[in-house]
Structure formats: C-alpha cells, structure tokens
Length: 117
Image (cartoon, rainbow, N blue to C red; front, side, top):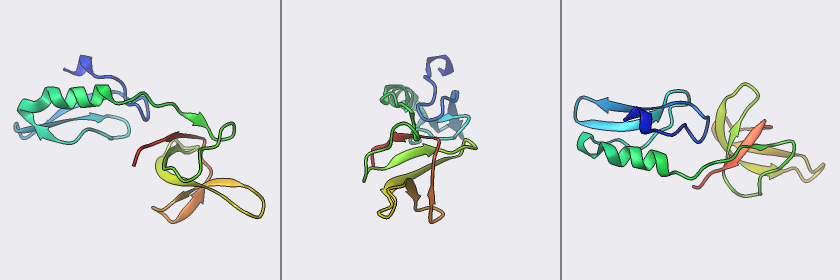
C-alpha cells in the first residue's frame, strides 16, 4: 500500500501505512507525524483514500505574501518547526506576525499555508 501514498501536504515527507495491534491502522507522515484518524484494519483502504484525496497545499513566503487576517495558518519557522497560529497586525507600526496560542507568543515564520479549522 505504501507505494500508493502521496507525500505529506504539509512538510513533503514520506507517508507510511501503520498498523496497531493487528486491529487498527492509519496513514502518517514519517517526518512531521501528521496523519489520518485511526480506523479498523479492514478499513485500511479508506485511510489511504483519505490521505491521498486531501487538497494540495501551497507554502507561501511570509516576507512576500502575508496571510489574510483572522484565519488559522500552519507556519514553518526558520528551524523547520511547524506551528499553527493566527496572523495579527500591530497597530503602532503595522508589523505583521503570527500569534501562537501554544507557547503564548508572537512569531515571524518563514512560510505559511492556510488551514481549515
């Protein structure tokens, strides 16, 4: 089944079909570990189809194209770290950053892509 899997739409990593205890399975990215929900092993084809049918995602360069305000964005930092946040504009000087609730901080990512919530 692994030869049927498309690369991860978030990081481009290689996907793998994993089984759990001979009764359940999921498709996950070997690099960033995102994946499909776990399903019964006999529904494995459904997990593969869910992984492969996701919309293609495009990374945008934060310095060239700013994300729209108020939407959730997946960001890739300078060190390759992935995090989700919301774009904000500082009123005083118009600087744009991404507010990351986990860690309670503002960050300036290298790249971003819109994600549905």
